[in-house]
Amino acid sequence: MPLSENDPVFTRQIIEFITVSNEFCLFTEKVETYSKEDIVEYYRRILPFLYLKGSLVKPVEPSSDDTSERFVTQEEWELLFNTLRNKLYPDDHFWVSTDMYDENTEIEKASIAECIADIYQDMKDFLMLYQKSQHAPKENAVHDVCRHFDDHWGPAVIKCMHALHELKLKIS
Image 1 (cartoon, rainbow, N blue to C red):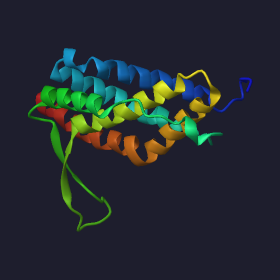
Image 2: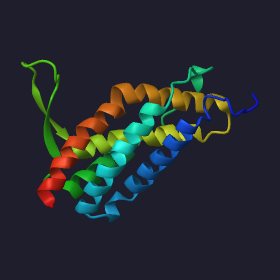
Image 3: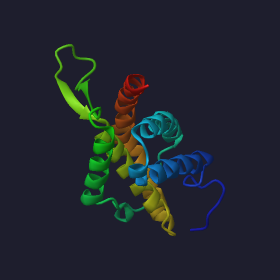
């Protein structure tokens, strides 16, 4: 399939989202080298931008479902999670309600490290799939990242932002 400027997997919104996603992943992959303060400050700044750019990406209907892939392994996720949790200790956990519209809802413990690791997994999987030379994987990458925005990494960004805002005030 020839590529064109009107191709839905090559829009300006997708290219900008790729740029922000890549910056997020590059920082996250080197998170062990940064201080707690630098980590909190970076994520406080990049996550709203990632959310905004992700919300502007238009979903693409993939021509083939069999080109979807996941790349981040459970071991890689756990290593990142543990690194972040240790870097943010003892301030990694926070409390959230399970349903913000139900006054009788349960309150549960959440983790900045878990949110960041989940977001990283979705961003890295998106970038790796999008880099494939064929067109169908690019369609699947855009389709998957849009679907995961609604039900996974978008909510994780929102939860994490509130916790990071409060943590910044605490450590300043």
